[in-house]
Image (cartoon, rainbow, N blue to C red; front, side, top):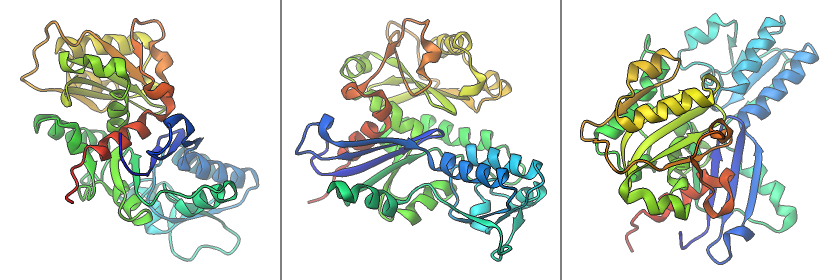
Amino acid sequence: MLNRPLLAIDIGGGTQDILLYRPDQPLENCVQLILPSPTVICGRQVEAATAARQDVFLRGHLMGGGYLVGALRRHLAAGCRVYATPEAARTVYDDLGRVRQLGIVITDQPPEDAVTIKTGDVDLATLAGSLAPYGVKLPAEVAIAVLDHGEAPQGMSDRVFRFQHWQRFVAGGGRLEDLLYREPPSYLTRMKAVREQAPGAWLMDTGAAALWGALEDARVAARSEEGLVIINCGNQHTIGVLLKGHRVLGLFEHHTSCLSGHKLAAFIEKLRAGKLTNEEIFNDGGHGCYIDPSYRPGDGFRFVAVTGPQRRLTIHQDYYWAAPYGDMMLSGCFGLIAAVAGVKINP
C-alpha cells in the first residue's frame, strides 16, 4: 500500500465513500465515511424547494447529474422555475441550448426569492470542518473518482462518446495505470471541474477505481494472472471487464437499472466467451462493449469477482463477492490508494 497519507473520495450516484488513509495505522482504524453523494444532496434541496413552491438557482461547478437532474425535471413539471449559471447548467447537458429547451433559464442574476443551491462534486472545506471537532485533519494529498461521460460533440450520444473513451483505452493496451490522471483529457469536463475544486488531486473514473480496488482482495489478486472477470455493480452504472494481470482485454458498460440478475449473468457469459457485442449492449440502453482481438477464451477467465452496492444482482450466481480489507463499499477508495501507490515518483 501507499507509504504516505492520502484522502481518497469515490463519488458515485448514490453515495460518496471517503477514506482518510494513514500508513502508520491499520486500515480498519482509518477514518471512513459513507455519505450521500453530492448529486443526492443537491437533488434533495431541489425537492424541498418544490414542496415549498419556490424557484431554485444553481450556481457553482459542473457536477454529476443523476439524482439532481431528475429532481430538476420534476421541479419544472410542477410549474416551478429553475435558474442556473452557465457552468452549473452544464451539469444537465454540456449543450446549453438543450438545457434551455428544458425550460431552465441561464443567468448570473436570478430573482431574489429563488433558493440558491451550490453545485459541485467536492467540498473539502465542509469535510474538514465536519471532522475538526474530532481532532481529525485531512491529508494534504487527495485522490478522487467520478464517472465522467465527457463532453460529446453536438449531435452525438453521450453513451457513444463515453464508450469511445473506453474502447480507445482497451485498444491502446488496456493498462489500468493509464486510467489514473494528474491532467485528464480535455473532454472529461467533470474531472476538470473536480480539479478546480481540489487543485492537484489525482483523478480516476469510478469504474476503474472499483476494478482496481477489487484486486486488493487477496482471492481476486490470486486469480489475476490466469485471467478473470471483474464486475462492478454501481448504483447507476455496471461495468464488466476481462482482466489479466493489470491489462483489460475486454469491457462492457450498462445502466444498472436496465439489468436483472439473469440478464447480467447472460452478458457475463457472452463476455467470457468473447461473443458479447457493442450493438447488443447499446441497443439494450447501455453504453457498449469492446473485446480486444487478441483475447482468446481458454482455461482462464472462469473466476468472476463482483463488487459494488448493487452486487445483489448476482446473488443467485456462483460468483465471488470481493471485499478488499473486509469492506466492499470502500473498494473504490482502496483502488485509488493502490493506483497512487503504483506511480513512480522521482526523488
